[in-house]
Length: 503
Picture 1: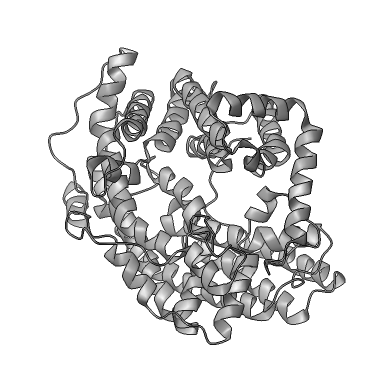
Picture 2: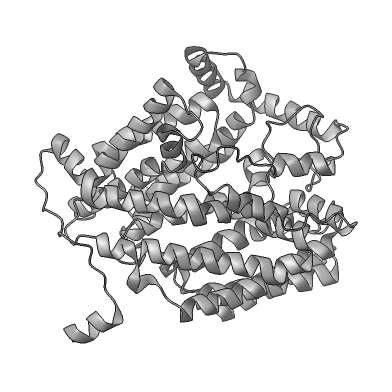
């Protein structure tokens, strides 16, 4: 079997799946109108994904992450757990109504994005070279990534300083992993999917993830490998299937539990943390018992935050859906607590460089909203990150207006700007970095995730593209010893007039 990123989903098959799932929900006593709205959400998602051309376009990748990680995974797992999907929610019909309405608007934006296509004018396409040494470019990206990390350690982040700016746009590690995977597959003719560059990167990512007890750091290498393999249309062999199954088992049975046990590492230095991890890895029953005790404490606490599932399902499963926190925000907003456009204005103002606006500061965040709603934080806790989806904040800002005009405006700007910077995702691999990035920011970083990507994200991708095509291959060549072809002297811009002349 050869891997390939999907560009469309069969609508008849999706209709059959949604119909069967509707019956399952009714058997589990889910409310009729909730099931009808979820049915509509699934069908609208498939139509929108197909119109957006699937993973051929940035909009299609966004729709995939938005639908699956905000709604579909969580609702599906509720059915697997044998629970009614609308149980343990304050406003289930409002939740599902807002989600379904937002997908209608996302479908319309996808149609507009398909008509107004900036990919042919993309800066990334103009900077590209046809003979890119992917392995050398990957090594160069990783060198830059390491350099920024250690510059932060050595010099710190002064507000408005160069190191602070580089840290904000440091996408070079994951991008290096993607390019390295592509390079390994290309250089070996599909016989290998890893090389010494990616193995070193995997090891360092694992080191950072284990040291910080971070699921994101530990799972990012796997995601990057999968994305690179899909881009290269890797032919799966039994060893790949076994490795993927093993990684999935480790992710659910060890990584998620380790991340939920970071309280055990408080006050420990790095050597002590690694000894702790080694102990927990060799004593899985101890790790499992600690996580279960932690879950029981959360169930018994008095912070007013109910669980969506009747029993804890593990931190990884529960993190793959935004239904519970969004439900709290929808319920709070519906009682007349609207924020207005102040958060959006605040996010755009923070795109202004610090040296121009030295007094800028971020007021609105998940932590801010959690305090505002009384959502399970201590009165003095202003550091814990709390996630809400962009549609929840849009509704909190402008009610239904946030769904019907605010979100579409931001989506249109986001898709158009990324298309212009990245270019054609089929031809240029750096678009895969946006796919990975979207997997994190789309479901859980409020509207600020979109606004920040419109500004800093696009700027970071532009720097990354310049680095990949102009500087990273040179850095990589210094270590690999392979020669590189000099880049073209000017940026090539392929537009309709040029295509006509060539014809």
